[in-house]
Image (cartoon, rainbow, N blue to C red; front, side, top):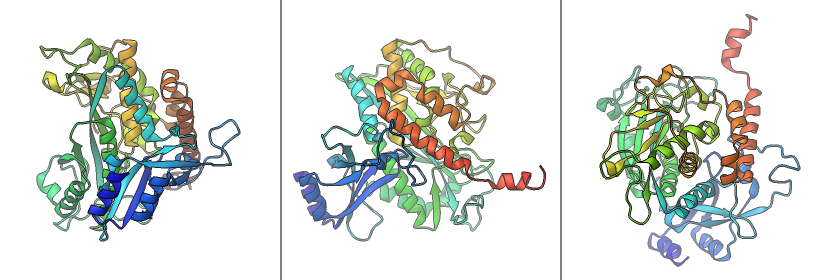
Length: 449
């Protein structure tokens, strides 16, 4: 508590944004004057209704039966700030801080269906084995023109040249520089917010970009990815442009992913457990890959959480359709980058940019953990295109949710309450989507059927 008070005083902070990621990774919470924030921490008095973790992406709440989690009583949960996450909010004129909170019940137990707690729970499993996972996310996103009519398709924004992109400019330097002013603000905002981003590249889509994060602690990286999405949106809007992390925002363009590079080191020595002294893959590495192959298809709602997510998981456009694995093979769901022994890792290419980073990283690490503890065996690595192999990932949200709810090993480790909460939220969103009549239906069915 003393650290937080001194931190706020040193920076003469006026207000504090108290953030908690909901099931979709959307920031929820409260904004308080700095003095009231410190008082709430001392008195453990910052509260939100428990239903915050059952809120859908549309802001609605699912109908709950008596046997479901939650109730009409909707009791308070208590927010406790993580001091390591306090940062300045760089886009405000007045000194404002933001800090990520953990959620607790009245009996001081963690809220089981809080996404940040789910990741912490997975990290505890590794810690008990003397293992320490390391991750490095890569987040793709599009810049698009301001769109105030949801019936109109998104289009690329106009850059410095006065013209929008019309084709692929993968890795184009000049194409990236079209939006120099936006990315100058992105890097400045990230530096002020202590978000440790690395490389910026132009991806294959029109005005599609990718930012890589430096590798490190999974919880810290999830926190940074959570804050980064908000930061990029704010930097873009400053220049009258939208930044979107939708998985598939533009028709006939590549989707946006959140590739997760992951490895495991020995906690005591820091040695990478995925390669031996001669640089060869270890048996533990192969069991980790096997766990990803066996269980990732069953936790897809944690990686591809929205209806739109499944428009991305189709052949081509560098998106996976299965969990084949291969060396430096981007058609595979699981890619082994060429590396030396100390940086041996596996790249999970399933997650979309729209995924909650806490849940996506938790899912990926959990599947690898189960493989390691169950000593599973992977398939043979493939050469050539993985698109010639069967499409084994779920093709619809409904199929993915059914598999997720039935996955006993995941339910046993993450807890039935979380699994049921995610299922209920996503089913409510699916049902809401079914009530919408699309422009495609009006165009092709109105007068033809």
